[in-house]
Image 1 (cartoon, rainbow, N blue to C red):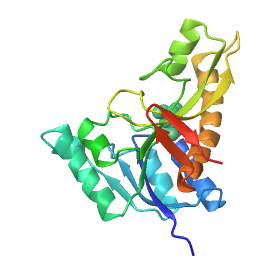
Image 2: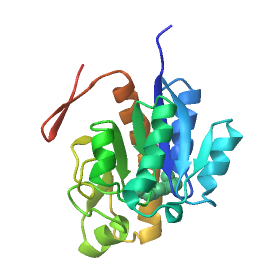
Image 3: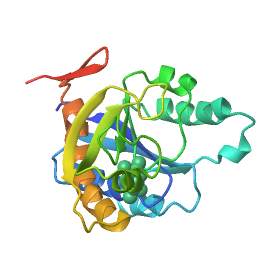
Length: 204
Ligand code: GRF
């Protein structure tokens, strides 16, 4: 039997994307297994979701470490111990440092609730509404040293309606996130993503 890709999911809160990944794995839509779920917040409800599915969880408190690199060193050590091959950031609210990116080059991915390079950082849905764009969406990308700047794997549009509020747009984008993140992880698991500079080629 083919060895399954071992993934880690890093979260800070609700974990609805984590849940979507768990569901896709259970439905065998992704050929991977979640080796560990790590949170930087003790009360992240995503940790409870993970435990319900019998997954290994870990809370690493950034406050316990003198520097961000030392904190990430602890995370990296756990990821290596668990044989993690892909790190999925899913609502993980800390920027990763160049140290961490170098440890897992082209093996860290993130989901962002906008069509990058528009509206990076936090509050993208509100920024999209305030700007007046007619189309926003979802981006899954590899993580590099910048904030939401890494090579783009998949994007899907979501229409912005005249009567949208931040809440309604966020809800529709989130539904799309749940589909797109699983699709991107599945492509990675099948070895179909080839990074060439800024471009990610999806192999047939
Ligand atoms: C999502 O909108 C994700 O794109 C953003 O943070 C949110 C996390 O939601 N980075 P959840 O914790 O997965 O429910």
